Length: 186
Image (cartoon, rainbow, N blue to C red; front, side, top):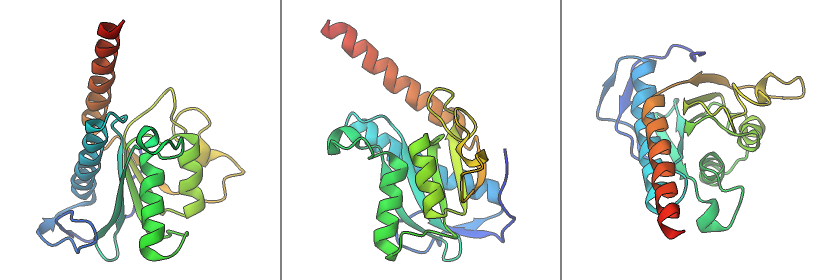
């Protein structure tokens, strides 16, 4: 696990597009956990419409704002690229009017796949924070280890394992319920 740079205390109230102003957050770990709670809420929203429960958000540490959120939507959008990370990256690009997202942090509940890791690199995300590891489909600490490849042009700082158990349990519960529903349909 790699932690990003130390920062002064952040002010917090995760409301998209508004300054975070409720209370002082004493350290980076607390900030990461607080923002991951917002990503987990996005994951729950995805599950509520029968999408795999993965949520993401983009945070601007300089303005202390959540710029955009995203949730998995490949099924509802009929788009295999509509992963939570991609949804958040696209919304952020539109919000700031630029495809380069340097200086911004991406929070996501599950280790990004190769497609999402590539998009994170192309967007020049400064810091990637994710919850649960994904030994089967992840591409950061598993599989191709995208950011370790010599052909990767941009490598974000990576912090893994933030509220990993919450993310893992949500995913396992979702797939268990889906299997149970499928077995009653057979």
